[in-house]
Amino acid sequence: MREQLTRQDVEKIEKEIEYRKLVVRKNAIEAVKEARSHGDLSENFEYHAAKKDKNQNESRIRYLERMLKTARIVKDDAADDEVGLDKKVEVYFEDDDETEVFKLVTSVRGSSLNGKISIESPIGRAIMKHRAGDRVYVKVNDNAGYYVVIRSVEKTDGEDEDAIRKY
Figure 1 (cartoon, helix red, strand yellow):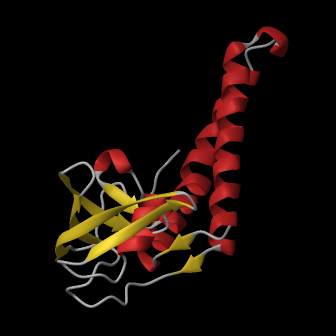
Figure 2: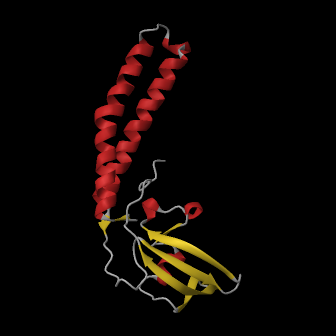
Figure 3: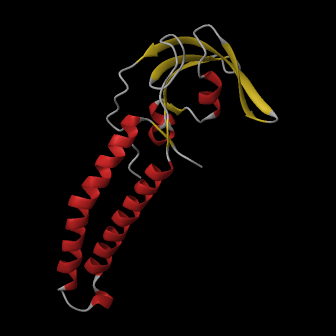
């Protein structure tokens, strides 16, 4: 599946790749060299730990590069009063008689524990392009769903301090 990313997401991923290649990779190689110099590699915990860190960094670089190659760039074309990317939405859940506030983001920034819901999630897809006052059916699967009412839509600046999940 192709990842949906904003231009901002792409820039942050490119910065992380550059940092990992120029800083983390260099430090990891030095750590492996240092640990190797301590002698017997079969019982050298430092060597194995340094190799593991180096390999994890290389794996992360490959993952991010592959994500960028296959990504689909999305932008918010919703009106100011419509639900869209990087907007805070107050949603009333009829079945639970509860109200929650979410910020709609791309899947790489999604974090339900922090109130950030992916535009690819069932609720994210359902409420996109709707306005305050709209009652929307959220289809979970072919046999289940629920209704929500959009109470308010608020435009945000789009900046996140933790824009891309690290691991």
